[in-house]
Every structure is written in C-alpha cells, then in structure tokens.
Length: 260
Ligand code: COA
Image 1 (tube, rainbow, N blue to C red):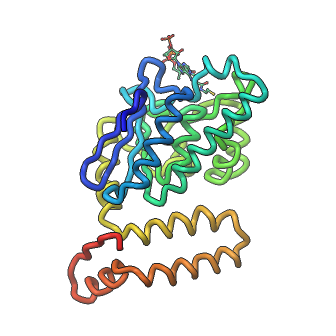
Image 2: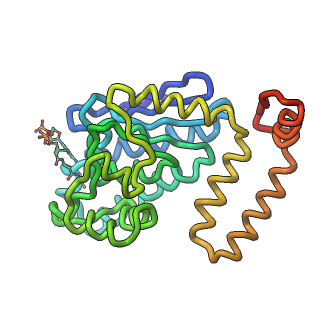
C-alpha cells in the first residue's frame, strides 16, 4: 500500500513506520493520521510482522503534535470528529496485539506525546522533549492524552504537564514512567531495533494476550481482571508455542516460536 506521509519498511519480523513530514516537524494532519490508520491495519493483518517501531523523520522531531493549521479552523462538530478519529487510530495502535515501540527521536508534543503513549513501549533519545502544550494554544489534549497520561505517570504529574503545557526532557520523562528507556540520540534506532528483535523472538500469541490482559485488565475491577487473565492463561495453553517453549526449556535449548 502507498503512503504519502509516512514510510513503511519491513526487515524480517520487524516493521518500522516513519512519520515523514519533517518540514513541519512531522505534525499529524488528517491525511497523515489516515496513513497511520491504514499502515497499522496492514501490519495487523501481516502474520510475518511480530513487532512494530514508530519514529519520526529527521533528527529534530518525533511528532510535534496535531497540525495547527487544521486546528486553527476547526468547528465544534469537526473538532469532535477530529478527536474521535485520532482516538480511534491510537486505540488501534494500543490494541494491535503486537508490541509497538515508540522510538522518540526529538519533540513528542501534543498528539506526538499521545501517539507515543498509545505505543506499547517507549524509548527516547536523550535529546527528546515530551509534553502536552495544547493549553498554550487555548485548547486541550484530544487524542486521549488526558486519559493515558495519568494512567502512565499518575494524576498529579498529568495535571502539572497538561495545565502548565511545559515539555519535559527525556530523563525526567523516564523518572516519572513516561518513557521506558533513554539512550544517546545516535543509538536510538539501534536500541529500538535490538529491543524489537528480542520481542520478535518471543511467542506472538502469548505477547498478544499479555498486551490484552494489561490493557483491558487495568480498566476492570481487580477480581474481574484476574478472571480475564485466567481465561487467557488457559487459552495460551492451546498453542503449539506453549508446547515448544516448555519442551525447549526441559531440553535445554532455545525455543523456536511460530505463532501457532
Ligand atoms: N503544526 C503545524 N506546523 C508545525 C507544528 C504543528 N504542530 N509544529 C511545528 N510546525 C512547523 C512550524 O510552523 C514551522 O513551519 P515554517 O518553517 O513554515 O515556519 C516548522 O514546523 C518548524 O518549526 P519551528 O517552530 O520553526 O521550529 P523550532 O525549532 O523553532 O520550534 C517547536 C520547535 C516544536 C518547539 C515548535 O515548532 C512548536 O512549539 N510547535 C508546536 C507544538 C505544539 O503546540 N503541539 C501541539 C499541537 S496540538
């Protein structure tokens, strides 16, 4: 499938999506959001792909937010539709069923921070800055930032970041749990690919269920979430990969997972 605003590369079991509008610091306009939606659906259907990396073109920005040219002319109804569309695309990413790694190579602001939060794991370059600066534009986060941010960093920090609008450096983002790892900028993609390779060798069905158990479980009452976990734990016992993983351990060899 062809995309005007992003690059999609496959390397074995790992796909890399690069948001590609460097002249506007990879701001997300409506066609870019739609490219992202189509790319994610294509990768969901591709059994050969086990892990996805999302990054931004150039060395300055991951994604500097929604495109402010579009925001400037939105109406109440188009604004609502815009928010719902962004939320839908980011839900697809969060629930892709394969790990998605955000390789944050610079500014992750507004919709960029929200995109990173929808990913399964986040690695930031030490030069990256993350924030929700919408308030300075007289608006508010609209791609579920007010919901994912407190779930990741707690209510107090989420209030501070969204109400001041001030971006924070990568090290601070790691300290509060907004990113998993910080690496020197020059090593970002190598580290993202190393992690992706590690995840790609794990059992795909087990990873899919773990992502679902955590994503859905944190929204459920504890006892119900434990029931859900037990159901998935039982289901994973039906896989060829469970037999392979346990057998390989007992035979003291590395498992070869096939996703069945
Ligand atoms: N939407 C549309 N265009 C954007 C953009 C966005 N979110 N972010 C940056 N751009 C454009 C700038 O308008 C500029 O275009 P120009 O070259 O035609 O003037 C270009 O990208 C480069 O940005 P610039 O502001 O010159 O770079 P900088 O290094 O001085 O500042 C930022 C970088 C990220 C601090 C600054 O661009 C910024 O604050 N962007 C908006 C961030 C934001 O509020 N995001 C949330 C939106 S809801």
